[in-house]
Length: 151
Image (tube, rainbow, N blue to C red; front, top):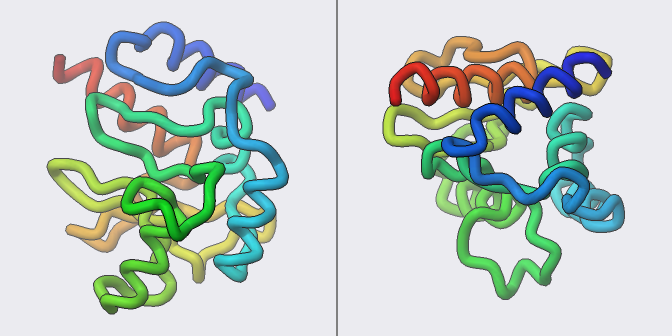
């Protein structure tokens, strides 16, 4: 829980670089459950915390895929379920990859085969296929800090 508090502080300090919804104005549990049912697996807890808390957004203009609270037939990009189904249909990535963000320098994804048992998954960088962050919280911290240091 302390990590969530620290991340919330970082987001508030970096508000010029981070464009998230207001804290507490996130995705409903109902839509998170619908997304998990459609995907066929449980999303990592830290990612669900971010969805419930902020709903979605961007870090330095780089979108973090979220869950849009609308029928998937009306979505064309940005929704993690829509993007996953699109990538699977086009066989763009392996089936154990759930892309969470495509930035100017890399593609970041949850490695679905690496569930920690605490319902967390590391995030990998596609370019190196190496672990980028141990979980979604660390991923956000790195992306925000990287952006703050580079701007």
